Length: 192
Image 1 (cartoon, one colour):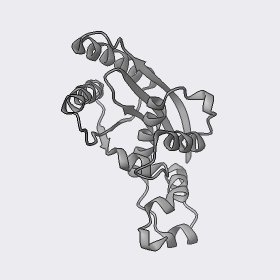
Image 2 (cartoon, rainbow, N blue to C red):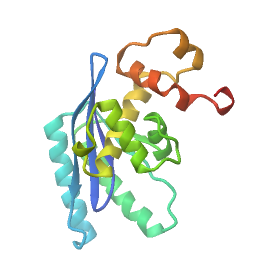
Image 3 (tube, rainbow, N blue to C red):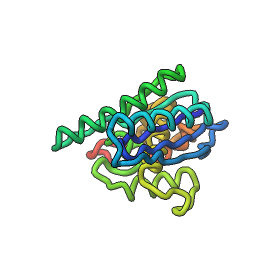
Image 4 (cartoon, rainbow, N blue to C red):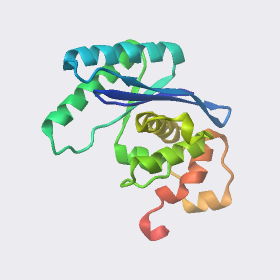
């Protein structure tokens, strides 16, 4: 299963590709699509679309996972981000791929960072799971996109782990690896 995760943005759109290869999580690639911030919004969206279509053709994912919207204080910022998300959804649909959307807090939790954690914590956990050096991921947009892909692999392949399952059973596959590492992130506060 190969998943392309997308961290949408109207100036920087991160994408990250992770594959479950016979139970191992493998980093396939990542990047950040940067567009001219002084260009009109329509032009930026066109450029984002073209670059994302190219990434989809290059990596040939089985699924696309996109980070959902979070609460904005500025309605204009939310609207612009919504346009960028729409570009990602359109590119995936044109490629014939199903799109899965995950709330930002769920993405953070799925890689073992708390819902209120910052981008540095997410980047650290992504590098740990994928055995990457800090120098290999230049921008948080890319590490966030890789986290979205990891979230989908975890969500789609593993049931929510319980403390007894983690203590008593060895899970198999990439989903099991994620679940084993993330048991504490899924426990209810009173179970910790």
